[in-house]
Image (tube, rainbow, N blue to C red):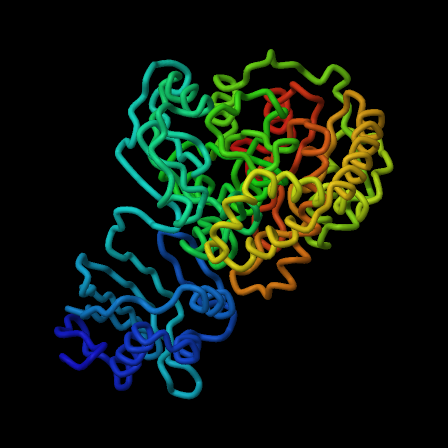
Length: 517
């Protein structure tokens, strides 16, 4: 058959009536991005499956949500289809397709004849042509992009570098095409990059970031949203979204990122990774484009605690301490921000931990407002001149954030700093030498189709949790030890300053082998 969407050659069993027509209609719907037709093509009993290299989707609702953010597939020709009839109502189709842009794909489907006599897909496994680089993850990629400059604890490891760090010979783009176009090549590596290279790691590439790191969703208006391999169809989390996605997808073993208000811990939580925000000031920031200097901290993402600890160990400039008291601390007020499914998973995990000491946290609304004000004032101080000169360069969300930042007065910033100083002193007194336990994020990764208002609410709740480490300058770890709604959520440990490596060891001891819930 040569009609659009139908295979040119058919092999195996004789297709039952209506099957090839249903297959052809599905192929046409894919290329036309006909979402209603694509949704109707799958069985609707909650058991439909669709899998590819990015992950597995279960149920028609998840599959439809994925389709709604993906866009249609490039035009392609189905060269051949092999038919295997399992029983009168179930048929396996294995089809070979050739996209017009090149390459070859393979799709395996189980079709079921439903009660209305229509054939629908029950199971689909998709293997598309290899992509040289996913542009939502990578700005620039090499094999390697930068070779190791030494040998040591990171021999054989590869690094995805957030597009805020200087890499010699390349510009810093900060997630914005206009900024990248004006940036000249850097003359030397950022200190955080150099330390990884000197320890034997290679730089695999420059990975995407939310614009100027002023977001936590992972979405970039210019480059799209990096995939979330652990939760397809859901946000990857930002602003270290590119390094996180590269690590979760197995394209790098270390993500080098920054964390101002959770930008390492949020993607780690959403994607089931180990993510560490270092003690502020413990890693040299030379060669890093800042957002808010009072809160910016360097950190790393990895699939295993061992790799994370080795990356941190070669990068930290201060001696590592241990938590001498060994005490865990819980702040029940913070759990008011957390969705019931996450609260349940967190409470269950607490059952395996010696009873923590409870403290009363600061006023959450006051804390968030003060943090947001100081962060905005510093972000505008860093980038405001460039943004005024490029009024149309930013995506709408980040543009709105900077527009508000421009309105913060000196008096408002001063008052907010006084509030934060009081909060910092109170938290230091309450926490002492203990380790604060809390969910890394209040929800699992939100859907890519979430409404802006819903994402704003998630952002406020998330930063209210994550800003405590930023305010105190303490190290904070997100360990993949919780699961809610079948999705990963991080268990966060916030420790005394200088206990970065000890937090990793403690999290390993709290969780099962392999670090998964």
